[in-house]
Amino acid sequence: MALSVPKAPGVAQMLKDGARMYSGLEEAVYRNISACKEFSQTMRSAYGPNGMNKMIINHIEKQFVTSDAGTIIRELDVEHPAAKLIVMASQMQDAEVGDGTNFVVVLAGALLESAEELLRLGITTAEIADGYEKALNKSLEILPTLVCHKIEDYRNVEKVKEVIRSAIMSKQYGQEDFLTDLVSKACVSILPDEGTFNVDNIRICKILGSGLGASEVVRGMVFKRFVEGDVTSAEKAKIVIFSCPVDIIQTETKGTVLIKSADELLNFSSGEESLLENQIKAIADTGVKVVVSGGKVGDMALHFLNKYGLMAVRLNSKFDLRRLSRTVNATVLPRITTPSQEELGYCDKVCVEELGDTTIVVFRNEGKDSRVSTIVIRGATDNFMDDIERAMDDGINNFKCLTRDGRYLPGAGATEIELATQLAAYADTLPGLDQYAVRKFANALEVFPKALAENSGSNGTDIVNQLYLAHNSENGKNIGFDIEAEKATTIDAVEAKLFDLYQAKFWGLKYAVGAATTILKVDQIIMAKRAGGPKPRQAAGSDDES
Image 1 (spheres, rainbow, N blue to C red):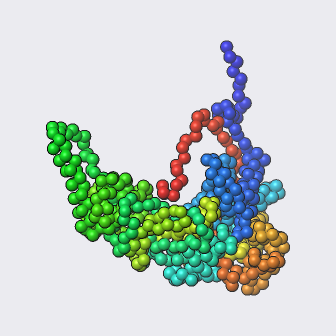
Image 2: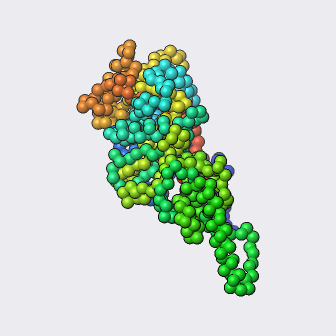
Image 3: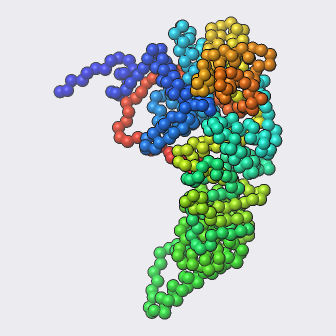
């Protein structure tokens, strides 16, 4: 008979063999803090225009070279449960604002680093969390008073350029002016008269070759495809869109045809052909010049399309079909029927063009009612174009936010130092132990100008001292760090037009403090034994799925 070894009393007795449990300050809290600290320090060196790139090779061995925190977080499969909470906060920031993901990670890490010092002094986690909550509420009270710029007319391209520039500059330093111009033009050109701006209406098409200077904005859509038939261009074209293949129609039910003679066989095939020809002729008679199909275009159908001078384009993605229908204002038809005038779309010009060695089909709409805009990015390598796309994505999301709330704060670390100055003064008015946490919160905000300075090769501590000195004067609340100067000096962020989105700071502070306090309040980590077998499949994160 096998000898059963009794389990140790306590939690281990309740759980299966192989379960792990960590509890108390040393095992749980400090462990969590050190994991988050490491993660935050990795991201800190990627902060700002001079931030270093990270080379990430993900689980399917795809390589990324980027300083964009959102991409780094998405591609790194973070395992540690506490670091995962920071990742979730950062992803929420990405979903809410679309920018400022690094802000959340760096601030949450700095808050936890400060909390560790307080814990070692004997202050409890509850008091620290309480102090952080008070500091957050005070910060959100102070933020509206720091607003230095407001954009009212977001149809004015020049004004939009001013505010989007710093968001793109933090990803592509040196090319910000050209990229800002592209993004501003694309966004303003499709802004609806009423209703909200939809980020999905700005498409990005990356075509290898040439240089970034050859990139352009196309009002309409661009597809990396070739047309099916002989007709390669159409102007002032009515467009019909089918989600089915354009071919001889198969019957719904299975049927058997008995053919007794050669004449019947000829009649049968010619009947099919004449039916298809009549359908295509009827489509051509409505004034249609372009037929877009979601499936294959049969040889016989292609022959008749060429005969009646119709241009045929095939799109494999149903999402592309939907976007195109939105662009040209057409209805997607599920089967080949003669469309009514209401179901047809309209486009000023549909043509085949060649960029480098890539053939593209362009649907251009030069009129005011263009609903979709495409930015065509040119570049020498895929990695470079991917990074440009991420910078543009930040710019587009900034535009989405400014249509909701056009307030802007001074950038270059000015907002953080001003908050830190006012929070330090607020901490002196608090009687309890939470005043230490509020003071540490103020110190944690110094990490941003420090990171900007260190990534630019300057002395971080020296810069922070200069900034505090400037912010203690009467009109120094807009003073930030000058990354372009030879020596470590400060600059007026408003004069230099370095603006940070109010929404990004507002939500960034909320999510970072939420993540930090949640991690601090954990005193036990209990991990059940992992199940055997393969991991469950994750939902695909393709942009088409959303």
